[in-house]
Image (cartoon, rainbow over all chains, first blue to last red; front, side):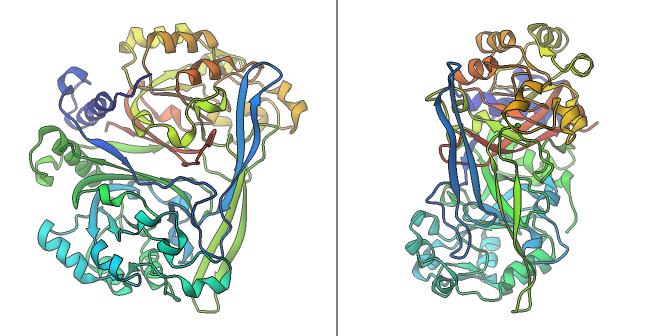
Length: 273
Length: 273
């Protein structure tokens, strides 16, 4: 079967129009009307996937691969990892007692218009860069107030270094002693406080291992956001392919009951050029 | 933060309209136009999650939960399982050498309009029920031809028994000897052949452990579909909440490099009543 992205998007629009204008579903009426494209914002999981120095890494173990004695091909594996590594979600309970576990986050909070804050020039010049209130103010000066229900994405430029741990997060050492060597950009706790006080966002994400920067020891941005049940997406990919606004994000985590987080598949639809 | 599903859907429509009519993004123009709602078609992963009798089950192991010596709450776990259990995707390579691994499936093939074939009355009366060509013909007689790019979903009614293994799949025994006791509905290989020859679907899914029925030994429906790179979604939930047509499905698997399948988060948007 061939891929027919244009046709699928036409059909998608048809469905949404159907739900909006309450008339009967008509594919013909919406043909040739939509030309958005999908971007995958997800790194794959492999032995190269980046984890916190103290966390168990991703492992894929083959159960069977090849021809069975019944004459058909079969391939299957087992997988294991820590919840917090690779492209993943931090559920609010990760740093905030009693808040949402990953299975409890409403779908409505996992979809929304993307607000893309590009701080890559400053962050690439300083691996300890903190994304600040000024960065949000600058975006709003140009594009208007961050809409309610947005998914705010911070492009630090560090995804280009994946999966080189030294360049991506400052160290490839493992164990508790390596944590002090972590250097990568994150969200200033003052900006986290500003966001929860002044804007009504669905979620926040970035292209580094943690919403708090590498040198954080108290993880205040996590705590400020999660207290308000705003989850964080970490190690997000391909943010350089998104426009400052106009994209729509769908971020679906593995539904682990009582999970503090887990693997996230995050995609964006962007308008045609 | 409150949930505001209506507003998010309005913004979603705005994005799609933006991409379709090539005018500037305008939230106001699309306010009050869309009222769809999200349905989660995913069972959560826990110690109760149903796996094939021979497959490793899902395990969640606590790494830390409670107050740290730095004065903040922290919660994190490790997870492990076989790829094929719970609500999951079978990637084409699972039964077809050289076909797509789970990370290779294009996003365009994981989204599409839902075609919901309800066979629950017949399947609940017969746990060895095979969804046949007639079931597809009956649906098309009423609703028109299955659109290109559809995600075909088979509602057998068995999701109501989850997580009771005896009722859901005929046995709660484990190990190779239990496989002969599996009884649950699946797709007739003749219907699989009809679908790949006559329709151009994106993917197929159902609310039982396997696209081939419980008594299958040669897994022909898997092999017929996967040879054409059509993936299967298994152990899907909440299909009884979908209309026969008009829903839109987004099915995002964990992006396991070279994976033969894996955990799937699958959601549907349905038109407002």
